[in-house]
Length: 196
Ligand SMILES: [Zn+2]
Image 1 (cartoon, rainbow, N blue to C red):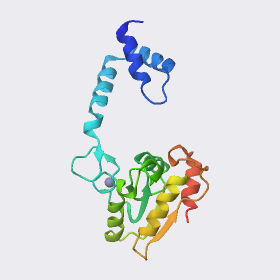
Image 2 (image 1 turned 90 degrees about the horizontal axis):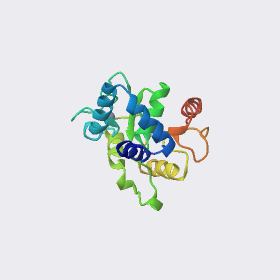
Image 3 (image 1 turned 180 degrees about the horizontal axis):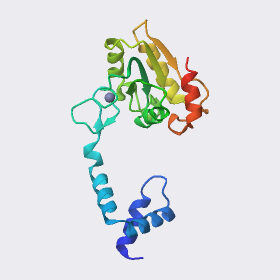
Image 4 (image 1 turned 30 degrees about the vertical axis):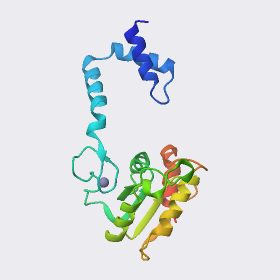
C-alpha cells in the first residue's frame, strides 16, 4: 500500500470503535469519494473544536458564540421543568425521543471519587443556582443507572435547598449499569414516562 494511504488508514484506526479493517475500507472509500465531499469533511473536522462551545446556561454544546444554545433560547419550551443529564450525548438521546419539552442542565460527568471526579469538577454549583433562581417546579434526574449516576443523583437530592421543587428520577426500566446514551428509544421513553 502507498505510504500516504497507509498513513491515512493508521490515523482513521485511532478513532474509537474502528479497527484496522474498517479503517482500510474507509480510506479506500475516501480515495474514490467526490472531491467536494472530501473538502467539506476535512473542513468540518478541522473546525469542530473551535466552532463548538458549551452553552453558558445549560452547558450543552452550541455553535452560537456568546449566546445560550437554541434549547435555552426556545421560549416555547416548558420553563417549569429541568432535566439533569451527565453528558451532552444523553441530552441528544432524550431529545431524539421528542417527548420532553423542558429545559436541560448538562453536568459534564458523574460524581466518582474513585476516578477523582468530585461534585466541584462538574457544573453542580451552576445547577443549584439555576434551581434557586429560575423557579422550576420539577427537577428530573436523568443520570445513568449505575453507581456513579446514583451517587450523582443522591448528591443533587441532598443539596437542593428548594423545598417546593418535585425531584424525580427516571424509572428502573433501564438496563442495570446501563447508559442512557445506549438505551433503545422505547426503553428510554418508558423510563422517562415512569419517572417518580
Ligand atoms: Zn443551553
